[in-house]
Image 1 (cartoon, rainbow, N blue to C red):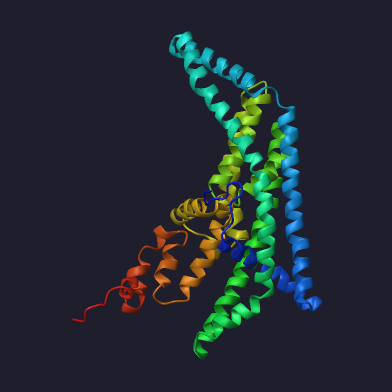
Image 2: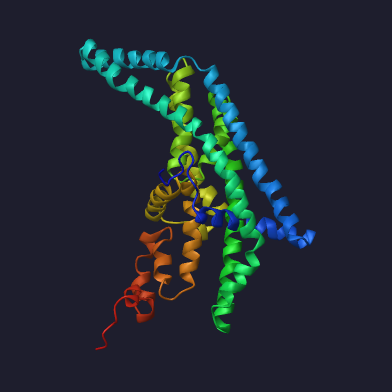
Length: 354
């Protein structure tokens, strides 16, 4: 078995750790009111995990309905490509037979591959749901024993270090809480914004597509692209014109500009903003290690790592290297961190004194 989330695979403990970290503010909130940790953990599951499963069930069920309502994908794509072929033949004086042959050999073959990929992805859902039981169990014990883990780490440092560790843990908890609340608000805003735009364009099931794009936005770049491509392909299959699919693309481009420049910076906060280079590398590494789950967790893991790095003098420059707007902050390294205590290489090589 490979290690990135296929059927029957086991999710690494790191996934459960970050899942527990994201649930911890909810569990702590209820523990202060219920005065019982076990009851608080189960309540947090009821309010966080069960609604999430309900949302996933809704999307899977709605997807099944959409596929049942679709005309033959291959037949519809064939009609669309023939129309494009006739237009290109007239505009560029191409040979009709050669164009039709190229479409048959490439475009339609690609559609068969895409449909097969979607079918295999849906079939692998059973394995993912089976692993979720294990995720819930391990997360439960991480939440149950979290105080013992905290005290273990505090026992490893001196008095001054204890204060720094407690301060860091408080920052991580606040960061995680803001990420969860901010991400939920972004999903709602994008779902309503995109859904309304699709409704104006005349796309069937507009708010399904809108909130699907909102949830996919959790995966930076990759998710947002998929969120726009899916309704575009859907409209290519069902629309009798070309302006609606093109309008869908234009809507998603406009919304992404609004989201990237106004919504996320104000809702999520600058502390969670990571520069695109590290986000792409995080998506790549997370995808290899944990599959889709790793890509979803890439951004919060990077944000948490950045906060941890900033607490140590030797790693502080790396935390600034991960920040968004790096091109504007390029001088900060020579101005603030050109000292021995900030040089990472000193961990491996002894700096010569002159």
